[in-house]
Length: 173
Image (cartoon, rainbow, N blue to C red; front, side, top):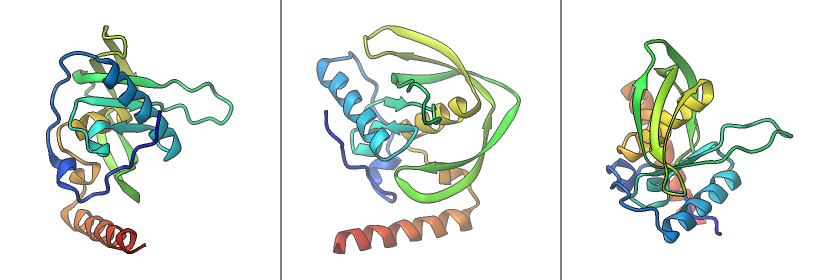
């Protein structure tokens, strides 16, 4: 297992639609393990394969945030929202590809998601609260959409300029 570098916005790969996973191979299982390690190291609660430059429909998440709670890592290949509640929730979202920037995003409060797990088995579950927000945020990444795309244009431009500056500073370092 290894920690992978996370792409920083703006990067054209973050705006591309990821390809479906045909079969869960040992290589993809290894990638999922690397993604979990990268997510925990960052630290974050979700990570999509496009964020590490791999355009495959793969996300990992773990929304357990309490210090002494047992982690609940999830690996999802080809995740898809199949149902969403009419009720909405607003969360202040952030993103590992947009470090230290946050914005309030309104999304369905509950969603039903189907996916293929790390063993290649079809799964379906309902998510609510932070888990619902996180899974929707990560599925957005697979469709080339970032949380800032939900913000007002001026705020989005301001965050993009900050990220361009951060990338320049990192390149010089």
